[in-house]
Length: 321
Image (cartoon, rainbow, N blue to C red):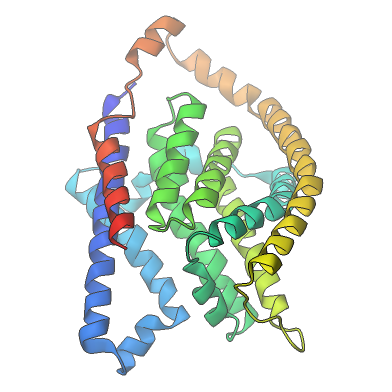
């Protein structure tokens, strides 16, 4: 294994965090000191700004990092083997089903988190509902699915590809939760980051993550959008009795739906294992034989000093908010 791959992934995550933190500070400082009441200030605070901001927050730092470290262009950030395989209709349907049955659980986790910390995504969703549906969908689901998956299930996961999948998926989930820079979003972003990582692992295609990410965000946006179309949409409430009652209902729905997600996931894994047999055999035959013990010795630990610096940076950022 090339140890530099794991180190590069961690180093990039550190660079990405620093870039995004600096960007947040610069934009917020400019807005409060110069942007309020101006055209540019209003544009920055509008939901439409999320499209260029996503590119600025993810794709731009990746391009800079690739150039600094001599890794080439953006195209080289995702190895060909991670983008050459088509998902196929069966995988598209299975992933759709898994995401559909996972929605109540995701909403439940977000609801529980809302009891303790503010949800920054609520304001963005509220603003996008005033736009045409497909424009809102582009902002909430399409752009994040492409930009964030390019980074986490594309660049980072491909550098962890020779680590055990449990370890690679766990770290991917941690990084995915951290980059949202929000205590509220961390729990479900962490879980979904791991789910997306496993989907990419079994399909051998980062497009599985893009499709799943789009579905999760898109379904949430659809539900939120439809709720605003009611003649008298329910107003936000801070009544703990009402919130508790809603969470209990979500829990009941999640308990009913979750087995469906588990069953479909097992079907998904079985299907892709069979699908990958020929491809895996070709890869084994093309490589020299290495004993498992030798492979294990060559695996570097992703929990290096850079990893712990990332964790500390996130903790400090949360304390300062």
